[in-house]
Image (cartoon, rainbow, N blue to C red; front, side, top):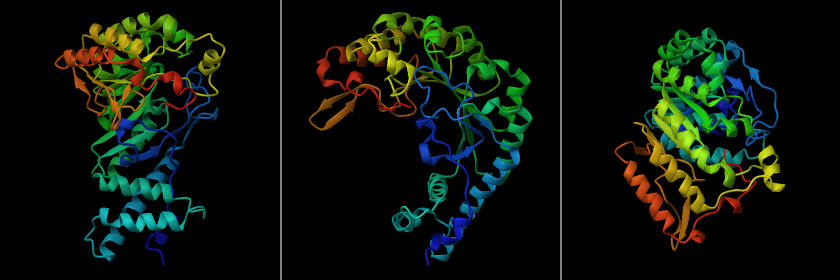
Length: 369
């Protein structure tokens, strides 16, 4: 009998996305809401949520998912003891791989849940990501109840994080944000994308630069670690300069803990992709993107960590394969200490043959989320 057979009774819902900086499947994934309450951004519309309706999940339903994750966790530990591994989870890797092969296509619906909990336990069971796109839109008292229950079931948790929309944070009272932070929600990820109002309107972000600033300041003041995501290349050839300068202005006002660069590439079946196909929008070249990043960095007056922690950031071809121009670790470059180092890397890239770089124009249609 497969040792994991007893875990088939446990299943919890897992959404489609999570930030790379949260460790992917190394964070426990708890789905609090389904899909995105806005779902109109021109660069994202239809992906990754496939136009599915936004839903707030009932608290008891979320608690049941947490209980299911606990059941899998306890079950894996029991199997470890039974097989002589003294509660250690990592030695079960071969057993898990065998189960994956054995149950491929056999309707083993909770195998993804088992893998998620397995990876999470192996990494120390310290971080949790609340899915999907805007968890704080939930009623504050209900989200607090979920967070407290989660921490009571898993006392090893050190960090709980979530995506959030600036519009949602603006609408929350400061005392509500502080209550969420005290309960255990420690980090927010906000898609700033750009600080340019003309571009924000063009991509239908549903928020202004000043609202981004207000939301970011409120989040920091409430005690959250804040990651702001920006999209180099989003302005195209026409708006790259105003995109860089105004984004730097907004980031300087907020001074978030992390600034994470997610280069723009048009995704199939989105308004931005259609605009690109019609010739209404022209992508920047690798050197033009470097000029934009250089202008942004030059204008930054922050104490943030600037992170290029995504594989869509510029890489160049060498005899050993693709090499990232900037380091892609999640900690990034601490500013202002590393600001000159980043500017030097920008100049290094500008002095290289542009043909060596992976060009965004060659991968249009691929998902960069």
